[in-house]
Length: 137
Image (cartoon, rainbow, N blue to C red; front, side, top):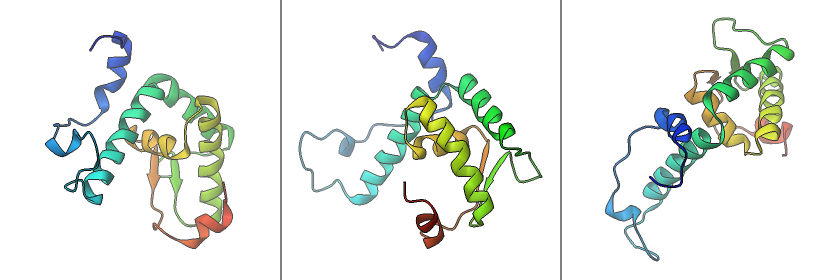
């Protein structure tokens, strides 16, 4: 692809393979574009953005440094472990705040990239009130 530097393509190598479907190429509102397809495209967009904006080598280094600065270490569950306990949520938000501020991306992009690089073990129950009550940003 023209316009993208060769070193950027190296960062995209850990994006999952993807085949273009006819429902992906729409010029307007397509009734076949169900919420399932929209969610799939959103996940793929997040993975692509995370790979492009958060270079593997630099991002991994920064994530490890941020974790070490907080005294986090792998206790058998992964370097950055988050579940529904307040202490683990605080640690995850502290690390992800540093990374999202440094790289100018969303917390979700940071979470996706940490996960794809094997640096995050996210064992939270989705939709719990604790996460939304503790952190309103």
